[in-house]
Amino acid sequence: MIFDSENFTSIQESTLISLIKRDDLQIEEVKIWKHVIEWGITRNPGLPSDPKNWTSENFLAMKTTLQNCLPLIRYFQIPGDDVIDNLQLYQQILDKNLWDYIIKRLVSPNRPILSVTLPPRKVLIQTLPPRGTEPFSKVISEAHAAEIASWVDKKDNMYSVANNPYEFKLLLRGTRDGFASWAFWNLCDKQTNVVVVIKVKDTDEILGRYNPVGWDKPKLFLLNCYKDCKESFIFSLKNGAIQNTI
Image (cartoon, rainbow, N blue to C red; front, top):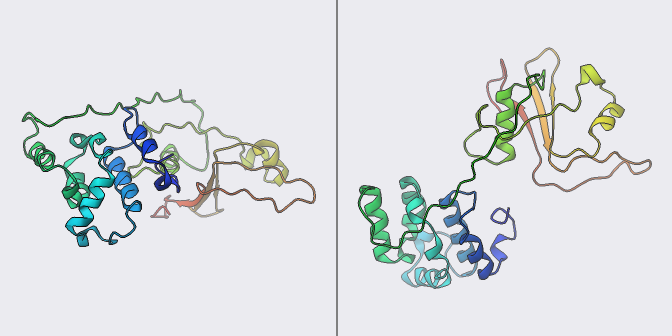
């Protein structure tokens, strides 16, 4: 949450250091690296926007800015493609011997490294909740649910049905509970992390929305009440003749 915050780059160096020292960050190491670089760039507002245009003085300024953060990155836990795509451009801010060892590890993974090597960060093994046996929806499938869960967690790789960390609980079904607005408010008022899906009659089209903050039943004379939320989204799902998810 801190890394993804709009105010991330304004945190103090001591806060950033205490964060990236942690062994239990549930985030890929290359993403930690990218956030550290982002933080360093904001501390040097005169840098050219494209690192390819940086001078030796620019790299030295960045190296000085990040001198207390760079030793805390677990470089040898970053996959080769990410090293080439995200580290190589900034190799001048790294100690030359360290960069040489990073490249040697990519070429020969089993060769001993003389550089200081921090242990891998601990990865939380998530225990999935027990699943109910009753189908939770007549509109979407378990595969659809896994796809929606991936968007909720902003995953680049979609969850499968087997590793979806969320259980979808049915709150309202129009054919069972009615389609009137009072039925929605009776069953969904104050509920958070709500997914609403509808299937367009006589078509394969499935539309939906995700609302993490939930809805509050509007009070009389206060019909235009809104909440701010940047994590909500709307979608349409691949289904039958509908070839693409949006």
